[in-house]
Length: 88
Image (cartoon, rainbow, N blue to C red; front, side, top):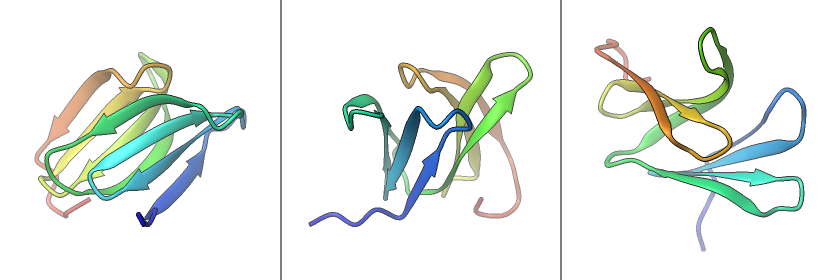
């Protein structure tokens, strides 16, 4: 049995993301996985975010002090920010 740490819905309410330790799965409204994001260390938080360049993205805060912005349609890594002080 796997426990989800967080679930977030996008603003339009047409898909959602589930955080499970080092993995995030984005689902559509039919509960079909659209993308799976895997990271080498624990992901602490997820949030849908309106990026000024890419539009709606999923932001991940990770244990290795990274913030990553991923496409919500295919999970592609769009941007990564390094060096924040806290764990997330």
